[in-house]
Image (cartoon, rainbow, N blue to C red; front, side, top):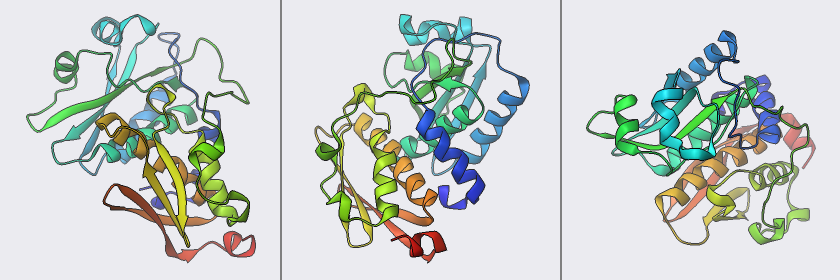
Length: 259
């Protein structure tokens, strides 16, 4: 999916990934129509692979109770709706790309995996028999502006990267750096990074759950984006529990000259 983005779009998503943090307090009614229009386009473009991104506006009364007391000023929500045959990995991959599109539009938001009433959310988003909501994403204008250099609670880098980082080509370093700041449920970072020649390996770590599979999709989005920012496009394949990112045959000149 990200392989279809232009170089300018990759640069914009990459910048958004570096700025994005979880936002739970919003100024309702403050987002511009142009921002909403950009998000609607992103939801259409990023839906696929058995995942539908549904949007709900003016959700303060209908959705406020679904997310509990941790959120304030919610009036717009996205739902990542999964077909019965779609993977949780695909939800995370496409959902995080949507989250970055929200950041691009000058808004903020936060992944919500469990603190909402699923049956009520399914009714609001018109889920069909084969569909379930895997997660929701309240979004809007943050009460506080996004910081230029946000701090994040993450594991030490050497706790998630098995590979000899300093010996890696630049594009793999870029991929792992952006992967390291990816969000995950309660900041567990249930993954480890490794390499196999020119391939990147994304390995699950810890208890395997549907939420951890979503988290693997989220970090895969970041890894692929970091690689693309340094000129390398590729595809993800699954081998048992391990996800493998393999370079496409075509490689940008930047990556070749800066290895």
